[in-house]
Image 1 (cartoon, rainbow, N blue to C red):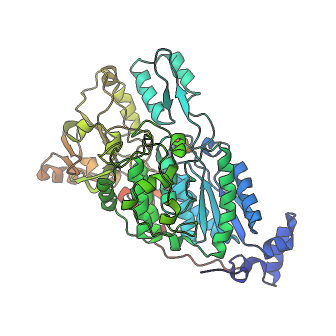
Image 2: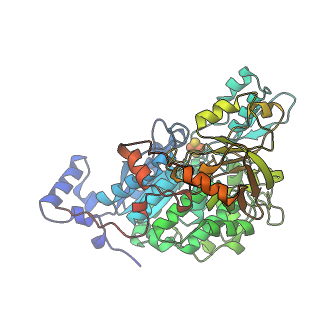
Image 3: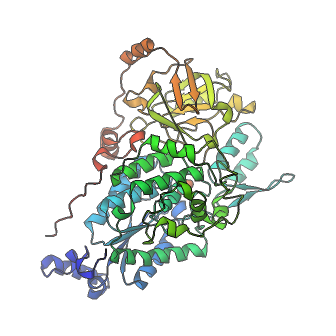
Length: 578
Ligand code: FES
């Protein structure tokens, strides 16, 4: 399958000899470019999610220049297109609220402009799924260029062994130590300048690394690209390679429709489990699959998790960082370790199959990329729980949880908002013990809105002081992929649309059985019916603007939280040019 200059999409703008064609060529020359620069070359869009308030993407302006160099060397013409930048930590109430906004922006940018193919420069948690969702709906050849992880840091304290510390994971650990009085104010303040040594994405196997890694496993990024540190010279070369390759992909007419299949999504799931990846990936993968017209459900992911052990020894499931993963061989080496579970014949952006891409790529460090016989965790990176508390499912990450809670019964302590949760968890008189099950509701896609990462509910301060570091926590929220703990997340349907989480009362008994995949409220059906009858669904919190659109159209967690009108592979017609 090949494409010629004559049938490039951008020809519709530039080669027609009418008044509009004249204006398009004229405006190109207004920018100092030559007529032939757009008449004789494919036009490459570079979607750039850089901004001054997005530290994970702080280097992407320079990387865009490298992509341009590659495009020009390969005979294309690059144009950089800024898109919404979603820096995970700064954007409130949550970047998840804006993932679909970014996806719409990318899709419409690509459709409305004379673009033949696109390189996506992104990497922070929502910018990866957001840009890929938009680009796959636009249907043009696309290549994802991951922002790369930030550099590793070390925590040194006199008298203690040096330890690697990573963004996100250690922030939570140190916060718990500070709350428990084991770190003083001076050290807490000093820690602010630690853990985040350079531009780049979080260097643990949080959501950012999970998403960029599984996009590579799906065949949408160059082999080995995910783990190259953002500040490595190799990352600059990677950007140039991406620019060069996207031009070739246009001539090969290598569109996402030729790459994204049931098999490529299966490979993404295998990668997520072998990585010990973030639970957030579940929502994004299902959203991506629905846009690609692939039937992927929570139970498919659970089935993969039962078969594929966690092999990547990376925080929060392990104790190494992304830089170590890069040195050990990165994704090609990891995928080679789990090749028996993969659909190896899937096409990728290289124009070769996944099998060809990973052939001979062995792990260089068995402590970082473990052999199948010595996994980091045999308990799996994902468990999908169901029961009367989560009829459409809930998820947890057993590899980052305490095994003692895999079978558990405890009394519920319910919070209706994060503000109430924070206030009450600081109360030294709070009625709870380590067996209590903390419940947070009104934190889902519609209720919060945007399904923020509030699902790592804080351990009550009085229990922290007693040395408690984990409890069973249940919510309709998400949790940061860098965090750890026995947190049951994404309860679906959420409480704000009448899901059973809304029926829980303080003191109710809740039963969790991870092996049996069960999550039950131990309340008889007659009582549940009575409570349901008395329940009133809260009104939408926003009456105008984008958030109103979001609350009216977002789907539930088990459906990917995409907008209902954006799902499905049906193409939007090309714009009229008059
Ligand atoms: Fe951007 Fe973690 S905050 S990747």
